[in-house]
Image 1 (spheres, helix red, strand yellow):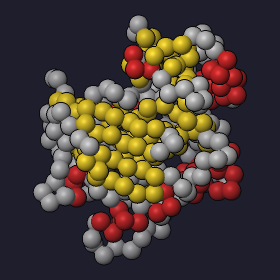
Image 2 (cartoon, helix red, strand yellow):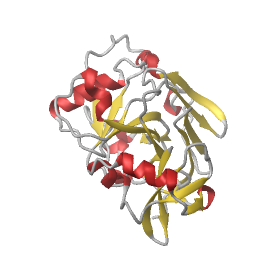
Image 3 (tube, rainbow, N blue to C red):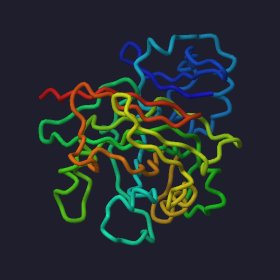
Length: 286
């Protein structure tokens, strides 16, 4: 079962793919205004039931998909979290003792199938495939062993980055991580169930069909449950908050010469069992 947020006649709507149905979306927006509201109201079970029994069926291929949640309060991003990615820096540094954390804005993301945009300020647009956690239950100082109880579900992200702009300041990557429509989030949210092992997920990124990133959450230096424990020490995690859990090695900047994205490139980020997020690159029109 998957929750899908889509745009129809200028209105944001909520639907879902029934279990075992890959292309038919049940529209439940007459009962629930958004996935974010479902999570805040602790109504996930009711929304799933509405999808599984509903008959208002639309073709997935005909819909303009949006990020699963478009109004998150906080978008946390974890940097350099895969062991191979840390080694990729080749600076002799030891594994970090604490995760690197930065924030993104909601305007920096588009949905599955929408264009991601290269801004005129930089031609160093890069891809970063990531597995994303969506918080379902509010909490502060959450213990690692209780972290799963606070997860609503999972999706994937292309955490698009302007490489020269992440180096505009000595200790700050914010500028290069927040250009409008530079990244993508989706294609839907898969609810977390007991059979999903957060330490046993594969993440892959392809550009024009070429495999560029290929890793596994078992190689994370800071596992997902630890990330939730750590972040909730200084921030109150709320329903709908987004955590991008880190990207593997293989980003375009690490090739010699670098392989930055250009208009017409298609980036596909895949996590088997969760989803495949695909976006074409174009230049921003200014």
